[in-house]
Image 1 (cartoon, rainbow, N blue to C red):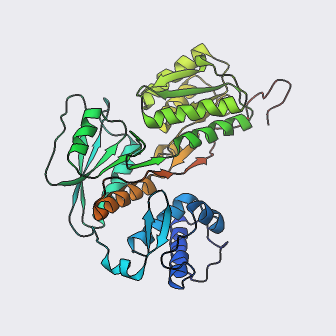
Image 2: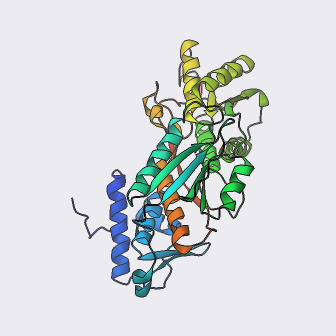
Image 3: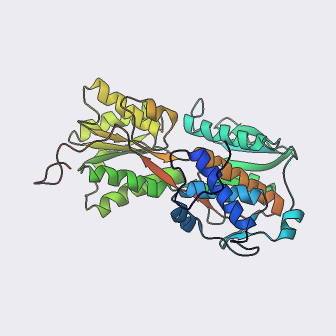
Amino acid sequence: MGVNKNVTNHSLDRNKPVFLYMQLTEVLRNKIRDHTYKPGEMIPSEEKLSKLYQVNRATVRKAIAELIKEKLLYAVPATGTFVSEPEKVTTSISAENKNLTFCWIIKAYGLSVLGPYHMDILTAIQAELSKNNNHLVFQDISKNAEFQYSDHWSGYFLVGELPEDIIEKCYSSNLPCVFIDSKPCSKTPSVISENYTGAKEAVKHLVELGHRRIAYIHSDIESFVANERFRGYIDALKESGIPIDKNITAVGNMQVEGGIKATEKILKDAPDITAIFSVNDETAIGSLKVMSYKGLSVPKDVSIVGFDDIGWARHSIPPLTTVRIFRQELAFYSVELMMDMIERDNICAPTISMPTELIVRESTAPAKTGLPGESAK
């Protein structure tokens, strides 16, 4: 099926994300070719393009990245995206077809296998790299594993929280390092999701449904992602005028088993809760299991919200309301950032922040009671 070149500003089909991305790319490509966007000029911001074409920012970023790859656009960190001059198109250096090998480093923190969230990202990065005959090597830095260095690697994807000595070893190699779901400092090249905003949106969804006793299950590992999600939970309650109650928070381990134990603790300490928001979907699924064997109804008795939108979420009983992380796009921009650093021989690069999306399914419903004197919405 060909792309309709007569697409208007408001006719992009939001129900067909792949075709929508192709449409937007073609629209922008045509505007460059007919000099609506002239060589050397900065194109509209992601936010403006998102509003103009009624698409999310993840779609805009993917379209822009494709045009950067085609050398029709180029990005200037902390400034904007510009239309390439004709000579820049022909003289730019390419990292394609070099058979590069990159190293993915993660610390599993006692897990025997990677969870579905990280497996999705790993698989997506492998797929992106393989498009240009590049490769990915996996390293799990556990308590008993040592960092293995190779002269054949071209860069590092550093995933999640890692020990400082590992980060130092990667940087001392003078190879490009791209952080995923982590931001050690403001100048590190990172690709992260808007975890704080996503968490606030999830909690405010529950507040709008009349919930006031909203429990939270967080991670036993101090991490950038977990801290941002917990901060979003706290700030959403504060902005809604709901007091913070430490008795309705508990610690899990980012897995189903941890979610079960944390939920049991919360129900014991605070049986009056009407909702639980969890740091990730696996934890939330643990909560669903507890409700099932205790004879509690979800969402009639307790609403439950997760985070990540892993494949399990839509197949849980009931299907889980969650915050979607765009893992394919996260992988895409991680690879694009890495390749851009290699092509420009530049160790410094900007942070790319990916939007999230609240996905409302059947695990949330109006609370049994709302504010004092009010009925549930």
